[in-house]
Length: 358
Length: 268
Image 1 (cartoon, rainbow over the protein chains, first blue to last red):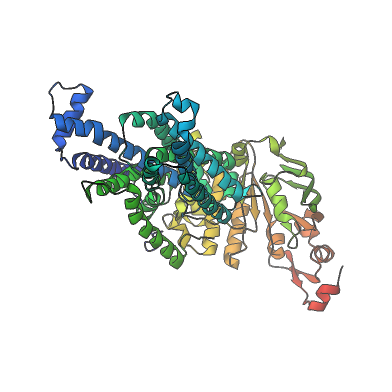
Image 2 (cartoon, rainbow over the protein chains, first blue to last red):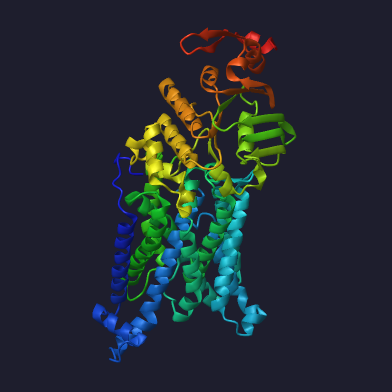
C-alpha cells in the first residue's frame, strides 16, 4: 500500500506492539477519567486498589460508584469488543484475500442481530425464559448461532468447485444482509414500544448497558476467540498469495477457513449480543495497521487486537461526551468516521489499482 | 521419484486425461510440452495433489500421494502456479519467507538458506521492496524464489518442484536465467517438472521430454531423441522444420508459415 516508499523501513513487531499497548493503557485511563464526573487518575488507582483489596483506605464514595459500577465494566467491555471486531476483520480480510471484507459484509453482524432481536421480541414466550433462565445467557448464544448460520450460508453461496469465489461471496453477503434486514423489519411488527426502543439501540450499537455480570459471562468467549484467531498468522500469510499456493506450502486451507469463520462468528456474534451492531471497526483497524505499518499478518493480527480497542474507546469517548448528558449511539460515531475512510479506500484502490481487486 | 500411473480424469463427462503415465526422477529436469487444452495443467495439479477425484495412482518417493498430509506434501514438493495474485502489499522478503513458514515451528526456518536462495535468483537486492510494485517478470522471479526456498535444504529424501509455465511472462534473458536456476536445483537432488511452451528451450534444458495432446502422452523420452519433426507435428498439428544449432549442440524448430485455410483443413 505504501507504493510511494520503494524500500520499507521494517519496524520491529515487538516495538509496534509495545507502542500500541502503551497507547491502549493511556486511552483506557483517559476514558475512565473523563465523563460527567471527572475522576483524576490517582483516584482511579486508589479505587481499583481498594476494590482489589490491596489498600483499606476508603476512596471517595461517588468516584467509587461511578468508576466501579458504571465506567470500568463499560471500558472493559469496549476493549473486549474492539479487540474481537478488529481481529475478526483482519482474519476475514486475510482469509477471503480481500481488503474490503468486514464482519458486517459477510452477514455475521446482521445474522446475529436478527437472532437477538427475535429473541428480544419473542423470547418472553419461551418456557425456559419464563422459568427464569436469564436473557444474559441466551443472547450471546442466539447471537452466535445467528451469526454463524448466516456466515455459513454466505460461504456456501460463494463456493465454486470447492473454492471460494469472492465476488459471489460478497454479493451473497449483500443478499443475506438484505434478507436479515427485512426479517428484522417483520419482527418489529410484533414488537411493543419498549422492545422497539431496545431494538433501535441494537441496530445502532450501544455500549452503555455494560454490567460486570455481562462482562464476566462473555469475556472468556471473546478472549478465547480473539486470541485463537491470532494463531493463524502463518496460514493467513500463505493464503495472501493464493489458496492453491497456501495448500502447496503445507496449509490445510479448508480447515483454516472453517476455523476462522467459526471463531469470527463467535467473537462478532457475542459482541453483537452485548452492544449491537458496531460497524467499521473490523474494516478500518486492520487497514490502518496495513497503511501505517505493513501487511504481514504476524503484525496485522496482534496490532489489530490492540488497535481495535484503542479506536473503539476513542469513539465511545466521543459518543459519551459530544452531546452530554445524553449519548450518541456508538454505531453512529464509528460509521461517521468509518464510512468516509471506506470511501477513501475505494477511491484510492480504484486509482492505484493497489489492491488488485478482481 | 514421482510416478503417475494410468491417470484418468473426467470432469462433467469430459475426459481431460486418458491413461497418462509419467515419472519424474530426482536430480533431473523433465518438461511437458503440448498444445493448449492438452491437459498439462490438470496433470500438474494431480501430481501436486491439488486436484483429486481422478482414477489411477500417484506415488511420491514410493508413497501414495493421497496418504500424505498437506504438511508432509509440502516438505517433498513445491509448486509454482502460472499466476499468483497477491492481494496485500507484502515485501519481497516476506513472500519468499512464506515458502518456509510452516517449518518455523520445527526450527527449520533457516535464515541463511533464505539468503542463499534469494542471492541465487537475484532478488536479494529487492528484499524490502513492495511486491505489488514489481514488474510481472520480477514478481515471477520472486515466486520462483519462494518455491525453491520451500525445498532447497538437503534432506534424506529427494524433493520435487512442479512449475506451470515458469517463463511465460519473462524476456529471453530472464527465461535463460530461470532455466539455469532449475538446473541448479537438480544438482541438489531435486526433481523438476515443468510445463514449457517454448519447445526450443525445452529441448535445450530438459533431460526428459513429454509431448501431450488431448489428454494422452503422444511421445516421451530423452529430450534430444524425441525432438523430431513427426512427433512435434503430430502433437501440435502444425508443420515445422527441425534444424540443428551447432553452438548449443541442440535441435531447434521453426514452424512453417500457416494460413488460416491450412489450419482448418490439415489434420496430420
